[in-house]
Length: 121
Image (tube, rainbow, N blue to C red):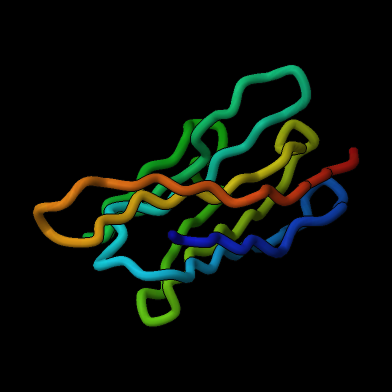
């Protein structure tokens, strides 16, 4: 079992910054990717950014150039630096990790409990 602990959400004004962190604990061989998703009220959960074990990055168009995802392998932590925040970034942000317990074994996907990010205009 893997647990994901998120931190760093809060209330900020438009144009300000926040940094989210997600620390993974538990027994696994390696993560394939770690990602941040978000879900605004009445909307579907969407991918914000992801990073693979070999550093391939993906961003949704609306955050490109404003958000940066990074990882610290030694601490099994992924961070999301969010700059120039906009009211439309308001959502609950969820950490997701896909891990494997061996190179030939199955993949397992885990979710954090979510952290609220609110951007006021």
